[in-house]
Amino acid sequence: MRVFVYQAFVQAGGTHMAYHVGGILQQRFGLEVMAVGTPPATGMFRYPVDMPVIDEETMVATASADDLLICNPSFSDRMFGLRLPCRKLSYVQGVRTFRVLDVFFDRYVFVSKFARRFVNQHYGIDGPVIPAFIDTATFCPGTAAPVNRRRPVCAVLERKHEPLVFERLCRTYERLHDGEQIPVEMVPVLPQGELAERLRQCRVFLSLDAMEGFGLPMLEAMACGCAAVGWDSGGCGEYARFGRNALLARYGDDATLARLLRTVLVEDSVAERLSASGMETGAGFGQDRFTAAWERELAFFLSQL
Image 1: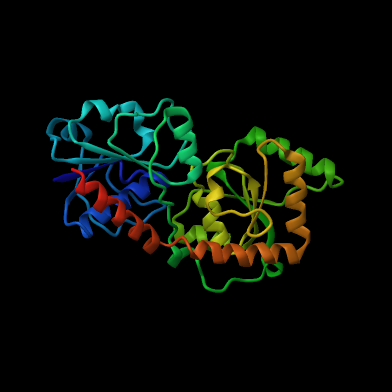
Image 2: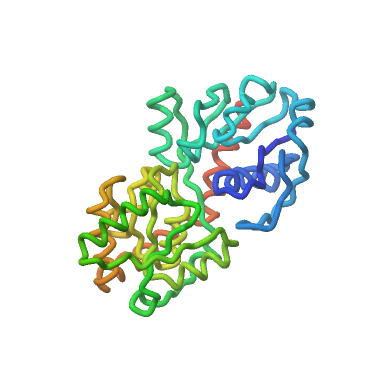
């Protein structure tokens, strides 16, 4: 059996998780694993498991019934479920990265209960939940500067915010707080080590993604000791608990989010509580947990072939 991991080296959280599923199949099950698509490049992630890279045309031309494809639903437009004769496993990590889900895979695994509910409601498909992991060696420092010694700013990921929605939130914040502006630091795409260093300097992480299958950035920021505030994106419910390790508002409720944000910016006790609990939460989502869950899932899946 050969294993194809489609677009394993694309610089996105979902494809990176699929890469690691391929790594488990190679290292723990001894299978031949190939990445399909773009080769690895310097960017956000490290790739400790070597995988040869082939192009999509080669996979399509050579895939047989004995092979296995690992693919995210964001590539549903490729319709591999109908085009390829091999077995196919989908790790569903996003719920708005596809227009119509490719429903012709053999197995679906979900990154969160939210993603499973979404797909089940719209397509009638079910399956197990295996949450994503964060690089705890990078994002969990063990100790972190207290929030009152951090820069009093809100870290916002440039790639994860909608400018018009953010401008509206800023106007609401100013109106509610006597013209005061949100102290924002826009964070560009960075290698994970540099991202962690930047997050550890900031008091607050402001999550402005309206809908996530899981939401790795918020969890990474929590692990770095940021007080997490933002929209309730759905998938973050896998780890975020209101008032304990995060403060969340319904998407579009600018007034509530503005008040929650003001609270963590001015009240050290609230920010410290969120920071401490967030670091504890982040430490619980390491790679060992991910690997153990996927080993069980893959052992079951392969036994059915």
